[in-house]
Image 1 (cartoon, rainbow, N blue to C red):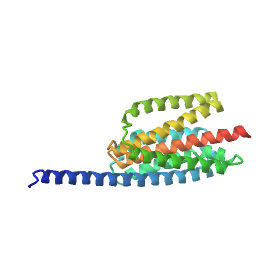
Image 2: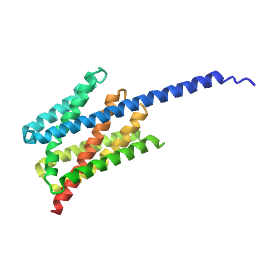
Image 3: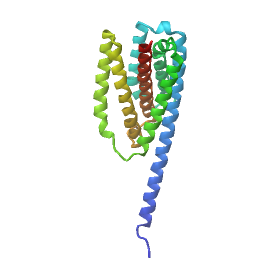
Image 4: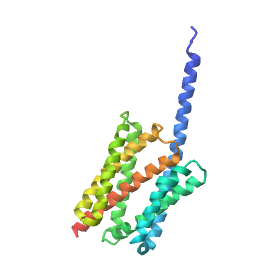
Length: 232
């Protein structure tokens, strides 16, 4: 009649509910920061379009260097410092918005430029939402994808740098297409990592999701831009 496991079951249930509450709190903070990052990037892109002539040449490499310094050195050291971590995160995403301004300006200069940007953003949002929901609901484990994704990213970066000298639209289309697939896979991987406790800070988690979204958007923007220019 007496349930000897009552206390242990009650403790286990409490632990599970507590863990679930902590996860929901972490996810809420992560996606709030992710949304804020998108707003900061949008502000950066808007301002960048106003001063796009200053973002060409040496300035783009300066901004790129600042981005690397922030993402590899500053953010890891400030992610647990309240206030500073937010300033650094939104500073990084704002600068990333500046860096995309030249590409946006080139797209907007096309006959259907505004439509192309809208299509790329809509496609990115739908893909991000769909893949994120799949990652949250599937029972499959994608944690073993990490090493493969990292190697693929390095190869894509090397290809992108090579095309700076080659200047081939077809090669850029191939790189952008590979990038769209790669960062879609990163959304799946990073979302599942967040759910499984792979990040110790919402700042890190939000930054990963932002980079996935941002780079998927850039890839789709390049694909649609190249395809539109080839039709002219």
